[in-house]
Amino acid sequence: MLAPHTTPTLSPARVTTVLRILVLSTFVVLLNETIMVNAIPRLMREFEVTAAAAGWLSTAFMLTMAVVIPVTGWFLQRVTTRTAFGLAMALFLAGTALAAAAPAFPVLLAARVVQAGGTAVMMPLLMTTLMTLVPPQDRGRVMGNITLVISVAPALGPAASGVLLQLGSWRLLFLAVLPIAGAMAVLGRRKLVDIGEPQAGPIDWLSVPLAAVGFGALVYGLSGLGAENAAEALLPPPAVTLAGAVLVGLFVWRQLALQRSSTPLLDLRALTFRHFSVALALMCLSFMALMGAFILLPIYLQEVCGLSSLQTGLLLIPGGLTMGLLGPQVGKLYDRLGAPRLVVPGAAVTALCLALFAFTGEETSPWLVLALHVALSAGMAFVFTPVFTSGLSVLPPHLYPHGSAILGSLQQVAAAAGTALVISVMSGHAATAAADGADATGALATGIRWGFGIGAVIGAVAVLVALLVRTPPAPPQQAEAEPQDEDGTATSKAAHTPT
Image (tube, rainbow, N blue to C red; front, side):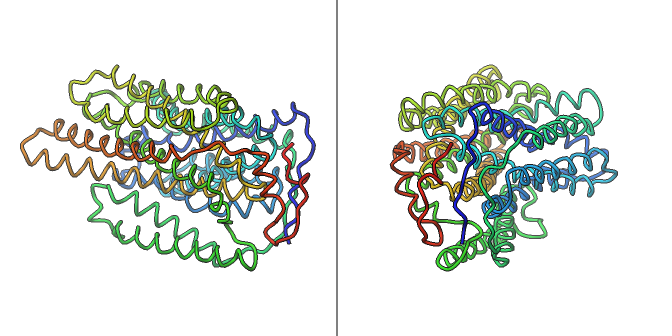
């Protein structure tokens, strides 16, 4: 039997302190997801590895996230907040220290896996704590601040790495982060309080490998579909993708079976809430379009426009800052206006910007690219904050960890799918243009335009889904969701009321 989810009574100042620690810690760990992008050429020379091998430093990070996040729904319900935070930061610090001292490429790759293990726990922990502590009427504003972290950290990764690489060795990428992460870990252990009570329960050991291998294979296969050497891969990406999809299907079947008799590893009853399912679909489509654009833009700016990696990173910073700085303002507007009035215009602006990117070419000014990227980022800010807030708000508190885990897992799948799709389209059309007589730069520019065109189509579908988004009446929904726990026993309203 699951214990009722209880929340300690905390003062507003203490709630702010807890959330601020988690937000800053999440910012530090998310920054590392993209910090290796500019270092790949240097690592290829130092460790004498191919580009494909060096690319695994980012792929392995994403794969580990996809493998670990599905388990966090179960994990966060069975340990205290301070324990989860301590484990996440300990893994991240250990991985960062190992990476800074790595004497060989395999050690560096293993260090990235350890880093990602800690990162995968932090994001669901932050979301779950927010939904538990913050009352419904304030969630838009607080979620807006979290959007700043989610969007700015990955955007600053390439720029930060570009600056650090100008200063010295690639090891600075980790040495600069290590003391900051260490300080956050110490501060967090001192200031954090436990939110809710751990709920003892068994783990289904069949679900763990199904989730790990299934989501890992799906993300790996999708990531490899667009690669130039996909046909030469030891494990063919289409076969790995199909195997991953089958295993994820078996994982879903297993969870549905466990919901009828015991405790599932990932409670899929969150998907029975319509508002959550619609928000999830919109988030996945938007993330596919966004990651596709993030992959194409550096290629376009460096290979077509001739900018350096540092110039490219600096040019993309304003967009990331725009998305992040708009987050709190969009959150406040959500509390006043609700989701549809923000999400529909935001999705429309996003689709329009992606369509305009499809008309860029060799002569396009980088300043125009900068303006379009800022507008694209602004559109995404008006989508992500309301989607996260409205989607998670309808869930009863005992499903917060599972809802956060579902969002995180499908984010990784959507990122891999979006990347694979645009790279495949870009490569195919670039090859066709080259065969028709275009020079290398012109052929690549043609392929990139087609890639952005596919992103625009995804964006248009996202607009249609955005029309289905509604602002849930949070208190009535909470009241309806509270009477039953997973075991069918009644649960008191007070136990589910966020502080």
